[in-house]
Length: 228
Image 1 (tube, one colour):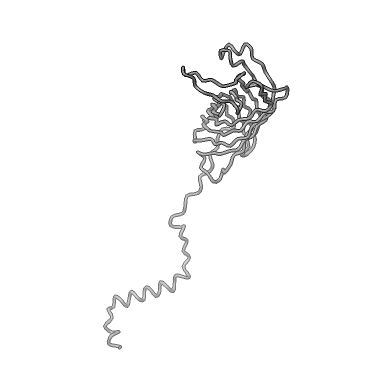
Image 2 (cartoon, rainbow, N blue to C red):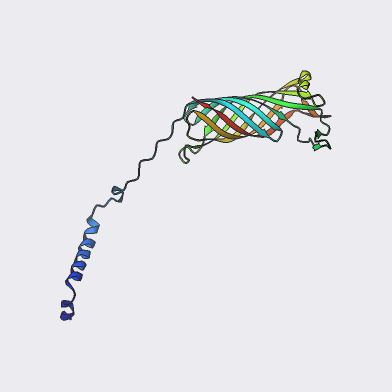
C-alpha cells in the first residue's frame, strides 16, 4: 500500500493539498460578488414640464370630433386639466343605409345633434415606478356643462346651422390613457373616454318622435400638443 502511495505523482499530491487548503479557507473568506461587477444605480425618473396644451382628435361611434386642452401638474402624479370639444352625437336607434347614388340615408332622421362639452378635471399617473418613462399611463375624470346643438337634417349641412337650436346639459367623462415618448417639448398620447350628460332644459330629437334627455358615447382620442 505504501508503495502505491509512493508512486502517486508529486503534481497530484500538490493539487490535492491546494484544494484542501482552499476548502478550509473558503468559509472564512469575505467575498462580495457585487464587488467585481456592481449593477449601475437606477436611472432617476425623467422630469417633464408641468404645463401642456394642444388639440384632441376624436373618433367615436357617433363620428369624428375635435377639441383643445390645457393641462397643469398640481402635485406629484396629479395633473389638472381643462378641455373643450365639438363632436356629433347620434341616437343608438338610428339606422343608416346607402342608396343607389351613394348617399347615406338615415331612416326617420329629424335633426343632426352636436355636443360641445367644457370639462374641468384631474388626471392621475399610474405605475410610475414600474414602467419606463416613455410610457406614462393615467386615469382621468372631468365634469362640466355641455351645449347641445340640433340642426335640421333635411337642410344642407352648413345652411342648417342658420336654424340651429341649443340645449344645456350637465355631465362629464371618465377615461384611461397614456402619454408616449421622452421628448420634453411635444406631447403625444391617446385616451379612451366615456361621456355622459343629462339635458337640463327638455331634450333633443334626433329621430322623429324619439326625444332624448341623456347623451352618452365612447370616444378614442388622439392627444397632440406642446409641453412647457
